[in-house]
Length: 296
Ligand code: GUN
Image 1 (cartoon, helix red, strand yellow):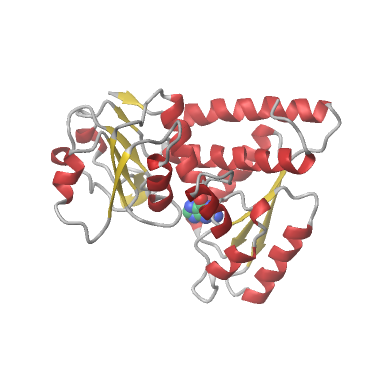
Image 2 (spheres, rainbow, N blue to C red):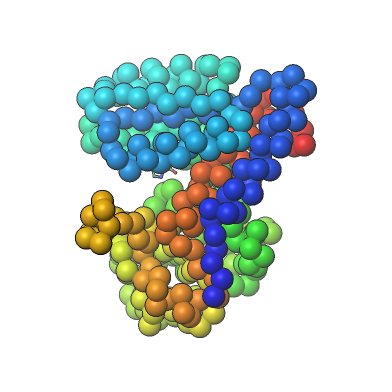
């Protein structure tokens, strides 16, 4: 079994981004800038944002977190998005999800200028991605593709099973892996809560991608020998042996499944850091486009 070490791989990608940014700075260009809108005090969102800011620092990007209280109005957020759309010094920005129930997140996503939508959530980018046109790929699927590519795991002709059909992970990764492209050409099955015979479907998978958010859902008996496991789940479970009283686990019973897998991502330290690296890649791409710079 080989560990797909997202922490290490994302570090390599960030080093490569930093070298490019340093070159642009030495040529007299400004630094790329990423902004994030954070609403409320969701601890998981706060932690994700901290990681994104830390990564910006590491690669030489400017960053800004715009925080609003949980009772912010839809109109205030739309006005903020409008300002960021117009701000020439901002290359990309994200609205950290989830937002409170009284906020219509779809309306927010539609208001983001697709040219600054470095999360790749706007339907313009999603549609361009689906048609194989140039687009910002959504960060988690893009991170998974980069991880498979860097690990030398071919996807062409493979049976891929994706569990979970969200707009930000399951659906786009299914589209990307089935496209006629270098990291595509797989035969993809998209499984979800109404899927029948899930165990038999999973047993046929050469690559199994779980993005449903249920701890220990993927068990040893559901996978075949040599499977590649990509665990997108991030679930907090009670663990009284820890000082905090809890720990993070994925969707996969790592200990037992890893004995059969050829490759497997850990949680934490697998897909999560790759998502952040992919966001940095998208921000760099937006910056290069805006300033008319070549990829050094
Ligand atoms: N919430 C969970 N994942 C993500 C992500 O990739 N981007 C944003 N904006 N919010 C998220």
